[in-house]
Image (cartoon, rainbow, N blue to C red; front, side, top):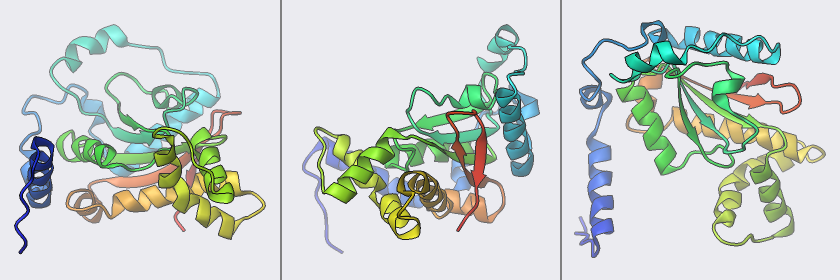
Length: 241
């Protein structure tokens, strides 16, 4: 085996992180979970019940009948820890707020956001923490219509266009969804790409090693996708291909 000598502190940390990540399992990670009682015992539910609860919350949001806010009553309990019932990989778009669109309370959702709602190493690590350590039973990849990141990626793919700064990284990361949409429905690339991007990242999370795939296979977590409609506020679940 080739002996790699990191020349910088960052390189060394990357090497150590890689080795530790390969060796970690859900068993070792669970030892980091808090020993205190669950601050929100109502959040200890099955993956299927978590999804149902999430969608019922979206129904209230669409109907404009949210539950009363109880910030004061939960503040003291959440000082001791957190046990969210769902993790959300969402887009950074300011018009899409998962806590609002699922009518969730403080401590209910563990949210990781990036423009274009796709998996990055940092997002993956966050979701591993949310499921293996905080023991959330559900991950939802949440896309939305009229997504600026998707639109930029379509321009990049169709026109061979580059964007300034680091914005091009977003477009390049979303290119597989654009390619899939062009092949699947060339007359409706944008909306199709939004859904394809959700599907691609759901599958990426389901098959991510060494942690999430084990949790999925053991049925301890559920990974699903959804698309938020800016016009209605409704979230429609995306079926796998």
